[in-house]
Image (tube, rainbow, N blue to C red; front, side):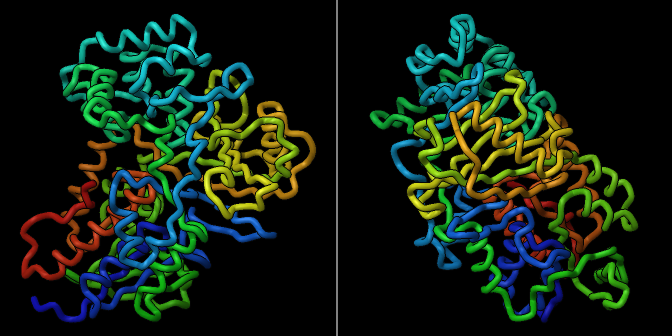
Length: 486
């Protein structure tokens, strides 16, 4: 088969779909690429709003650089010079204990300590909790390959108090999920590998730091020195990707109803708007949330649709508040805080957006984002806007000593948007990959499979584009084409 002008349709205009379409254009600039988005804008859960002199992010406001995929894409689209590092000096975070914010011990990264003295001095843990954490060095390593929940792994190795007071809120801040159900192997396999290779996470971290000596880890909780953000916001990166695509390749307000097969290697995409005629394609990439992908594929492969529908998603509301700096008693000498479930409060976390990055607000004002809902407090997501505002302002007033009303409030809701990688997720994804491969010409990508951060979505989309090119340039399909492997 010659590399003639092929037709590829990408369904979904979030970062995964954009990365897929852009990589397809890089690899096959003569092909006809059509990116379909049901909304009136690109980006999905990612959106930057410039309002009254503030830069407000509706979704993720930065991305990590310890994997290369997002940085590499920014370099290729000419945006590398526009990336800001987090402000130095306050690269740490807080955790709530008994209604007060305490700094997470330096060197404690997600669920492994690299330094012991900060642990000894912290008020977050009791003496018994500290002793149990120190005993992790001597806990025998698990030998089998079976999956387990994050909660089971952490309590087994670090003890219940470390789980309740440190790990659960940190994991909740990343996944808005319940660590009692989240899969260790699907979310943080590095820690199982540390246990397997070194016998102890503490031993692994100490050896890692010894190899890196004399440089010490910077910050705590979230490795803030490794994060960057576009100067003009996340949407500026999305816009830069979109501008690189061929004219008329992006089609907004185009909700897809179904995908059907018209011949052995030909596909048809039909729209919910009956007046819009269907589009023909040689390959179709579905870059939507798993539930939407399940609906589109129900008529092609019901078991595949069922497996996709089993990938759970949590819902979250983000309340963005702007205050005068002198309204806040707390020194805000960190980038935000997380809240353990055992504190029985009504928020998951708070992010000091204008402390992390310059240019988000005037220097005498601050932007704080408050996260409400998630898998453990699903009922709060259904609160009215007024109730969400009251929850956010009341909690911040109690935790940070804020007095007076905010200058600005903005509320966004994301229903069923954060995928939850429950125990067994990797096996479910293997089943999905196998069934998709047998369809021949249908591809899946997105945050429901191999990673939830911006870099992982970009990597998944770009690897999927490479799979599409391999499929369409092959004279016969000898091997199944599967979801990209991170």
